[in-house]
Image (cartoon, rainbow, N blue to C red):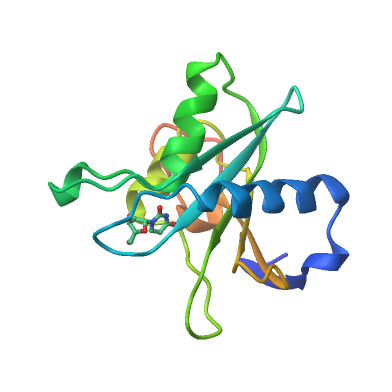
Length: 149
Ligand code: THU
């Protein structure tokens, strides 16, 4: 895999399909009266459980949180810090994908820089697959002098 690739939902493992479906379901709970843009995320923990989250906006705009942060923060609150995959569902009016913002990339890299990321639209037909360290290369604390580029 390069930095990212686009694949068919139908070609994914059942566990990944389930993760994407969960992110689509929790997207319905998005609190986004300001942007009107609903996002759902779901992260698979190593114990097999799924933690879901949606974006939660605020009248003070910067206080809002993204779906990815909600999902990861919920898992960490339950004592889970190791993850195997994260899915994000959001709609675009065109054929592009919604990719995590810089803060979310930083938030994800804290826990697993190798984690696969699956981005899709609510029709769940095409999926963009990438990894945290492709979204945020050379993340802080993870690079040491024995590694090469
Ligand atoms: N948003 C997310 O929750 N995740 C993303 O990956 C992209 C953006 C939210 C933030 C804000 O509530 C709304 O979508 C519009 O940017």
